[in-house]
Length: 323
Image 1 (cartoon, rainbow, N blue to C red):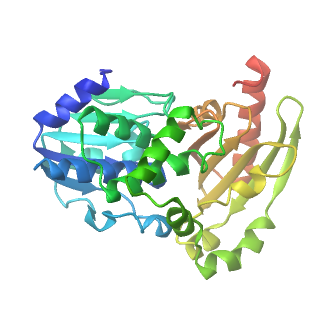
Image 2 (tube, helix red, strand yellow):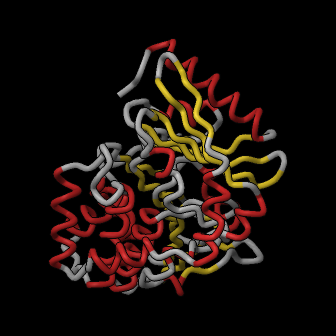
Image 3 (spheres, rainbow, N blue to C red):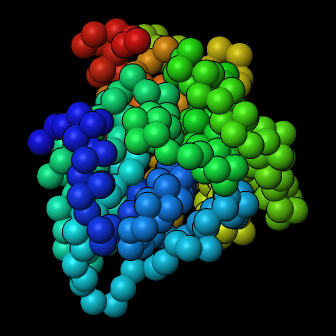
């Protein structure tokens, strides 16, 4: 059932024992939104648990509150409410949905949301889920601390490519400015996000060697970058920023990062300048935004490339570029 932000706030006020979670392979928006809401709800005296069916990327470990995130319990437990942030479908939250018995409130901004939750607040016009949490805090007249501001600035800035992507809106910029006034330090946040371990720099040439560009008549060039399992392990599965290399090549319309988990499982990230890649991802059971989306496809990497090309061509022939 789709609800308003005011009703979402009411549900949070009524519940006491609340579990917060977000999607697996969490990004800056997922963790930033999660932690900011956690700090607010704890300040109201509620019993809050943070559960995540995944590890925290090293590049985001600087966020205040990450030490409060717990792994899943061994046996199912009950709660008054399970709040799922930034996850457009139930599969993206992993095993949390099986281990927590509670009504689900989903707060999200992905246009591809499958409406799986008992209660859904969806604002596909929001640049990030962090923007929605900021609106929620304003609605509740919450005091925004420096920690909350850091988390929310990270959420909004990362989902907008630090205000370079097409989803950067006037609201996103206004909220970012407000969060700086509340104590967020953009330069420090950017430095933490941009700092890479030596291992990531050493394997970069090997990853760039996999660059492949294909020319499509309808969409223009599609560029693939592939991270094989051994390199994925060296990176500790942290591939943040890699997709920008093919994305920034002149003439490339769609950039694709293929993370090869094993011989038969490929995690796919898609970025574009004009094409609605969320529709490509939906073809394979994934989702996301018009310009940034993802999915998981089973099969060898060469076959997955061909399947993606076929899906892109099919969508392009049906209705051309979608904006």
